[in-house]
Image (cartoon, rainbow, N blue to C red; front, side, top):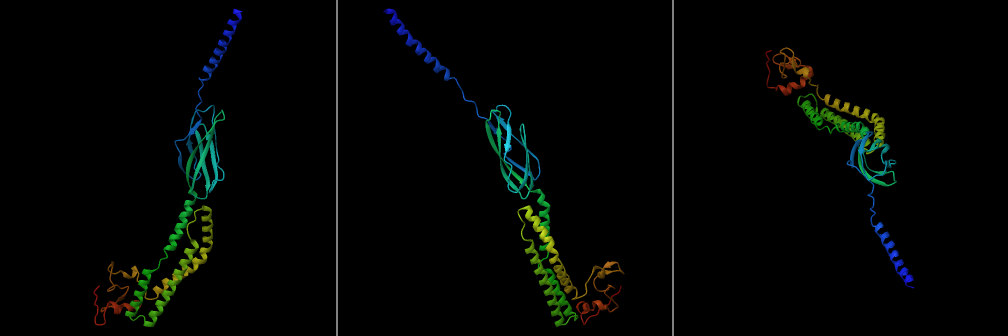
Length: 297
């Protein structure tokens, strides 16, 4: 009887020992650090079709790392070249239609299947549009250079007044000259406004700029011919008022100096001085009726 009781007491002791040993073994495990990817170049600037390299850093990866990125359907970008490398990737944005700002998400996957991602912001310049923009601005400036003709108007009015003072033009003739000038001027300004409307504003997209330059080039000849004709009429309306005075007329070939009107054989001769027929209108302006001009050359 005593032997059976001893065996019963020993059995629970072994059961308690086994349970305690299992608990100590589970408390020793530690979690593995997460796989991650990062870059020192989160903001990149590039030109259209320019290949740039973006460096990447990986932490806690298992085995080799592969890279992927969604490069399709980016607005105003014809295509993207994306080439993964061991330490990053090469990329180029090709055939742009406008300047582009794009946030590219790059996903990295290691040998165990763990993934991580990072985002790089790209600013890409549409360089192929630059010469076209320069052409557009040059056309715009040439149209703006067809000014309001304030200086020409002042000159025309002064020449009309000069023609009347000299007796070269009657009052009716002077008015007719002024009206002819005004008509030519109004025609030029109207054509200038037509060109401004035709050219319009600079498009944002290169394809739209191509279409505008093509259309403008076709239609410009329709407007250019009339505007050139109007400019010729404008110039003619000034020139017809009085004879033109050129540097050749003002150069005294006898003395070899640039002279005043008096004594220049290109303008007249004699003593007292008399202007030639072409410049007779200057007689009453330069030499008053009660004066004479004696020149010794």
